[in-house]
View (tube, helix red, strand yellow):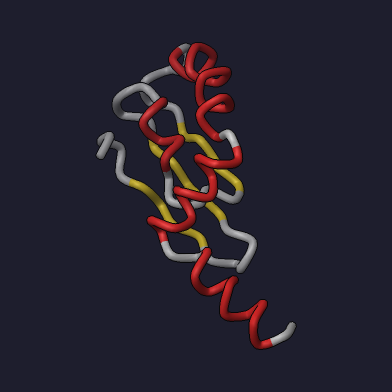
Length: 84
């Protein structure tokens, strides 16, 4: 990977920048389409969110839903049940 590409990748990996890129790419439409089906989840469900990014999809889950998110870089995180 070139130095410039590595630098751009680091910048894009910052939460605020990543969310901006996702917004420009149309993540709002994806959230709109998923909102109704996700609200039908049992309140004690566990959702595995592959490539969970910054966790913005989390706000669409019912209260008390736990989330385990994985990232392409191998990092994984478990988000709290409460909606931030």
